[in-house]
Image (cartoon, rainbow, N blue to C red; front, side, top):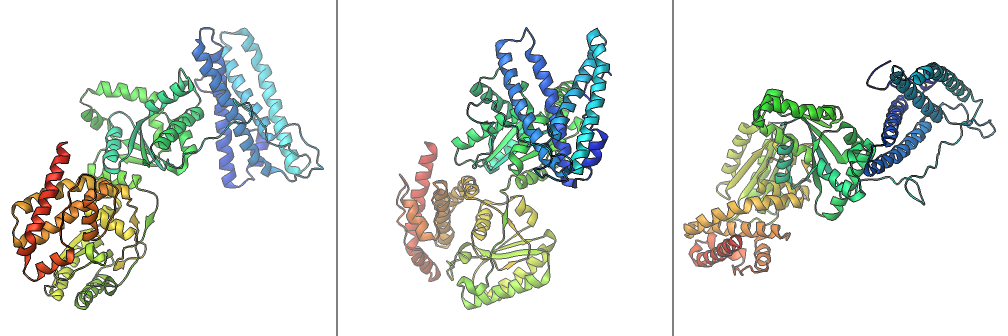
Length: 600
């Protein structure tokens, strides 16, 4: 026998037949645990060989010893886990039964070590006479041990013997206790790990989530360097996959502990399938593994180098198991197509777990005038009857906040519907405008469910969905419709992007200021103040409260605007010229201060 890989662990036939009586879930768990136990034994053998090397420096010896301790702890934990499953074979656990000297998992563990010993001696037999003479004796031992394991399994299944307690009570590395398990920090809510070969888009995808979702980007190499410095490791990559995963999680926990407002993290350069698989076992659904795939010519084109260079990089990554990460991934994405499609999938993956459905009300519950409420109710019924693809209808803005003012406020209509429903929505809105008979301007927004779930939202639309999520009323919601969670942090990030555009529009309106521009100029002042408050983590509703709060910000000028009711009355009654000067002065104060702050 002369292969590069150790043979798999094969259960003796009697034990294999006995385990077939276990439930499907337990059989899968047992197969996984015993496979991992055999793998750990193989790594233990390698580590013990390495530490015996007389040329190994002191730092390497220390690392190898740490790895051996960690692997031994993992070996005992896996054996205990296997015994927890194998106890299901026992026909009786009555204490009057004679106990056996070892558990079934202990016997299988010995069989695993013997399998490895035979393999290593067979490999050495060509150059080592002693090893060649050992092989027949080792093969006899395996036969005898297999028969003994089968006999024990038969006695356990027949209820003739009782297995001893599976607990091993091993101590590793701590004077007063056992191995301490590591769990994700409560603030480590979501981690997205990007794997793939060279130039597949890992860094680009992480950068997108950083810019759009505020994710904290981390490199796996950086985390290992931090761990090595913290624990005095010369080469953390020489440790077992489980230990490497624990070091990674420990560094992520420390980062989360020190950054209390950070909830989303990304890890790039995931090229090691074994350690990321162990990290997934430690973190569960908090870790989402994303494997990005793209054809080789596509990746070469992106690289700006030659095919030979990309192939060489691929070979290095594949030697570490980068291509095998795909089998562990929660999401495998073909990154050869549309960037919009890629980003939509990334936003869905990054979204906070869980969705919320808005509450519903009738238009008469929004405090609208009777005629406006009746026309709105007719619109809702028309949309309800026309197309089942319409998922939500809501009035947002002042109407949704019970702050609608006749003759001043718009009716901001939000419709979530499939794109094919656009024609029917447009027809219904046209009839709605006719029914309103000039009572208020209608501003419709039509967005598809896919765009919503992918967070392809304007900042103002994100705020409207947040209000619905927080209990704001909708007029129509199709059963089963759920809105993605939009946090205050999402809104703060949106505010930083929207405020510059609002300021540019306000500056244009100020330059064109006249009586017929009073309403849009005033509304843009209020909107700009609202966005500015969000950047300061101050949340206010209603124009008067927003303006008062903004005037209280540090170093911000008092805008000294009259109450909204006075401005709206002047607008309705044709007296816009009376309040226009004070609105212009407030716009000038805001724009001057904004220019000063951005210049600083």
